[in-house]
Image (cartoon, rainbow, N blue to C red; front, side, top):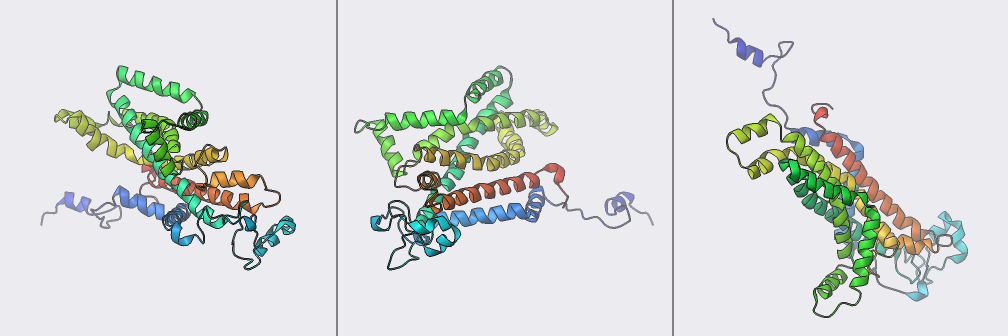
Length: 346
C-alpha cells in the first residue's frame, strides 16, 4: 500500500509524534506571556483600580474636594502622630470626631483623602490624552515622512529636529505662561473668551493638554518614520504594489498593522513622563486652577509645611509614585510580550 510521505512528514515531529497544524496567534501568545509577567499584571490591576477610583470619585470620597472648614485646618488623626511623632505638638483633630479626616486636612481644612481621590482625575486623564495626541500627530507625520521619503522626508524631519533641539519642558512652561497671561482677561465673545471658558470648565486642564500635545509627538514621529522605512521594503508590501494597491491601502492594510505594536508600547512607557510633566506644572503653579485638586499642587502646598505636617506632602507623593510605577511595569510587560523574538517562549 502506497504511503503519502508528504502527509507523514507534515503530521509528525522529530520523534514521530504528531504536530498540531494550528499555531498560536501572535496576539494570544503575547497575552499569555503578559499574564505570566507578575510585575505587568500588578501594574495593570493597579491602573484599573485607579481608573475605577477616578470614575467613582463622587461616591468614594468622604467629602467634596473644595469643602473648607477653617476651624479644622491642618487637622491630624491620632494614628498619624504615631508614625510622625513630630506632628504631635501640632495635631489638632476635631473634638467631636478625632478620626473624621482619615489622612488629615490641609491648611484650609479640606480633607486630604478626598482631594487625593479627586486629584487622580487630572493625572489619569493626562495618561489618556497625552498618548492619544502623540499617536494622532506623530503617527500621521512620521508615516508620511517615512512612506514618501526623499525630499518630503528630509524637510519634514528637519522640522522635527529643530523642535527637538528646544527643551520640551521649557517649551511647555513657555506655552502655559503665554496661554495663561494672554487669556487672563479676554474680550467677551471672542475666540480667546471661548477658550478661557472651556479651560475653566475643565478645571484648567485644556492648556495642559495643548502644551503636552505640542511637545509629545516628536519622538513618536521619529519612531514611526523608522518603523515605516523598515517595513515598506518588505516582500508583502512589494507584492501589494505589484497587484496595484493604492498608497492608502498599503499604508492602512499592510504597514500600520505591522508597526502599531512598538508604537503602543512606546506610548505606554511614555505615560509616566506625561503625568510627571503635569505634576511639575501644577507644582510651580501652571497646572490646574484652584480649587481643582492635582497631586502636583497638593505636593506644592504640603511642601510649605513638610516639617510640621509631612502627611500633606507624603500621601499625594506616594499616589503619584504608585501611578507612575504601575504604568512603567505595564509598559515593560507589553514590550516583552510583543517582542517577536520572544514568541513561543515561556
